[in-house]
Picture 1 (tube, one colour):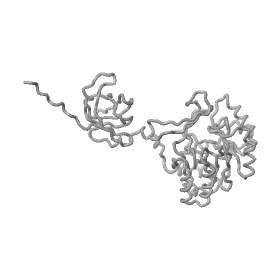
Picture 2 (tube, helix red, strand yellow; picture 1 turned 90 degrees about the vertical axis):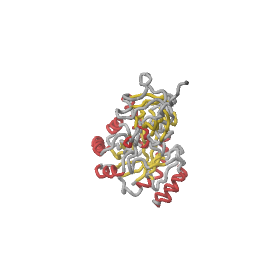
Picture 3 (cartoon, rainbow, N blue to C red; picture 1 turned 180 degrees about the vertical axis):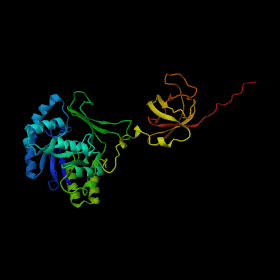
Picture 4 (cartoon, rainbow, N blue to C red; picture 1 turned 30 degrees about the horizontal axis):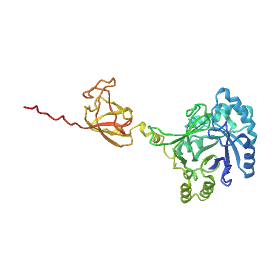
Amino acid sequence: MQLVAYLDKDKFFPPSSFVKEVIVCLRDFSSRPVFAKEDLPDLYAEAQRRGQQLLLECDLLFNSEELERASAELLELESNTDCLRILDTGLARLLVEQIRSLQIDLMVNWGNHNSEGLLGWNEAFGSAIRRLILSPEISHSMLDGFIKKIPRQVEIPVLGALQVFYSRRLLLSEGKDDVQALASSEESAHKNFPFYQNKRGTFMDHVRDLGILDDVVNSFQGEQVWGRIDLRGRPSEVLWPLLERFWESRSAEDWLTFKEQYTRALFKGYFRQNKSSSLFRKLKNEHLEKQHDGFVGEVIDYTKKEYIVIKQPVWGHHLCEADWIEFLTPEGKKIGGRVRDLHKLNGHVLKDSEHENYFVMKAVKGAIVKSQLYFTKREEAPVVSSPS
């Protein structure tokens, strides 16, 4: 395996002893711009002096009106780079049509998960493709299969920030550039997803950084497979020497030392196994197949501190006002409570939920969507004797 890495704004070049290529991200062409166009000649000269290739990345999508201008600007910059990395296939086509000798790294990391599709891109661009940049959701076994079938270099992310969302729309603040925010969702157990927006769109990273370099460092020999490192925004002056030591030793101790100095939590992503659903566990309830006696139904809607809506199967246990109940959340947490304000969707008060496909009741704290509802016990109203 060979390594390629992003340059950060401090212009700190990674060690050339084991990082053979560096990636530059310019304003107007990158989701995370670091440099201006004017910086490119000096960066290229420094890369040449160090014996590293300099790659210019354009990981944005363009509409028809923007395409030719983007192509023209990139061609002006191309003389100060060794290769262009392009996401927009329309832009890639324009570039290779104008310079027949041009080679590009094609970013097929959104939505290409099979060798047939990758071979299709390889056939469409032919010798113009130097490398195919693959999805971060490619597993180890899938990558093994691609290497055998695809006659090109391939690249995977191995360390650093992992982008999981991109929209051309400006979702954080209309018309504003360089907006950053942290976002959370009731549908995810994870919090504080990093969002950032520039005039080209809105982007989201995973809450944790990817860290599989220790897994792949000995898995792939030769120059067909490349690993990408992204230490932008991390203490690169501290981390690069530690990475160099690990690369030379390949030891678990040196990797652990590196991880201890890393400023964010690392995870293995999807390389060993597909955990794509783990981000959004609340979208499903893994306990659905474990229903037992007393099952009433499932929470399909709720408004905090106000009401919840229950979908009740025909065989579900029916409820009455003041029944004791228990909710089982998607995470397996049990929450007790009582039935209050039982009524139909149209607002009519219910004596019990029998024969109802859907019913509404007062919210119980923590009973979120996809929670299961169970009946636990019913207390009969005490008999009040009339005075003699």
